[in-house]
Length: 396
Image (cartoon, rainbow, N blue to C red; front, top):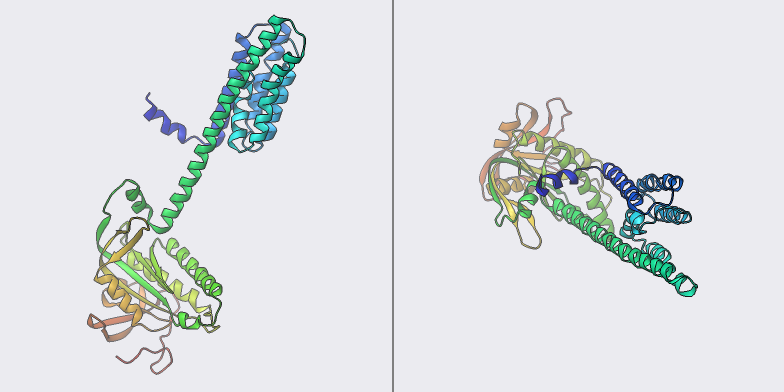
């Protein structure tokens, strides 16, 4: 089995599984070190084998309490060394606890343990009158301990750096997914240089908050931004709930599309449902000036070209007559109403209720038949404004 085949499987293991594997490996390594070390006697050796399971059990909670596990492991090793038991390098039983604590940022505790188990024995033999042979043995073991513990600390630093890099990659990934659809982000990460797709039919919706900008005069900027952020956050949640793609916000306007980047047959229905939900949300709010808030909503269905523009500040955007027409449906619509084109109406007329607005002169398009979306067939009808009322459409 090659590394290419088992590494992905290893990466899919849960943290709990990894912890159990680590505990078994640590217990096995300590037990093996005791087995190959010089034996001092049958009774002492049997007692010595308890060190492996103890350290393995401690390693299971190292993620939650790294310093406590490090100090407990150190205490167990110091206690073990008080008896005539086989000796081993300190880095072996401390390896997992020492590397984990260092990776978690507890460097002072790690260095203290390394000094206690590595440096102090050298100081001890230098100030104590010991037989030369014993002195050389202690120094040789202490130097080996220091070397191995330094290697373990380097491993801990590598783990810390890798964890920091992974966290940064996750933040970058989250930021990228905030501005691009997931499938488009994957193509961008695959270094696809030009991302542009033609869709034969999607539904585009524009929402504009009527007189929101004018009502913001004299209001603290922070309050205006907070109001918009709160409202657009709700719109984002609605778009996600209905499986739609938020394209962008422009000031106090919001643009969303259905049927891309992944095509879906019910894109018009999903956009219509979101439009009605947006209408309900807006109807219960006030603008920064304290007046009831209203939204103009425009929808059109048809072909578009979608793609990513920019190299440093990416943007997923749409182009085409459908986008322009949906924008006109909004700008030449009626406050508090959802205006749709005839082709959107024909897609939805069997499932939703409409009010025929009639033929209007649309800038850049000429005369167009338009409709007001009122409700779903089982919903509550929204009564359109009467002619001559403050919210009635301007005469065409």
